[in-house]
Length: 166
Image: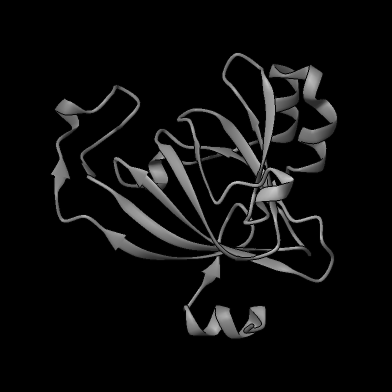
């Protein structure tokens, strides 16, 4: 298997603001006008977008949310633990990977407007996944959590928020 540095170079991955590395691999040419989108969208959006996303064990994907459902597709590497907090404050987690005997799933959809963060617990490792959103991603739809603000909204999840925010 390729080392993470080789994959970063081969796939032309760049640092992501939430943590990890990414490269957009697809952006639909179909444009959805603002008039057909829910009110949280500030302008038209491409119908769909996809990225490669690599997470390494020496960092984490910090809590953030987007306006779209986000589908995660596992490709290779170690298991990712995905942590989610619903708008109503319900915490859940899922293991994204390919060890079906350990109840891992190779594909998972994070619902729109859920705060979510991800980490790899195996030392000196990484995971490569794909992430797909529809309507397509725009950084206007992305909100990186401020630790104190998110802890005020969800004080019952203070510890996980503190651990997985910057």
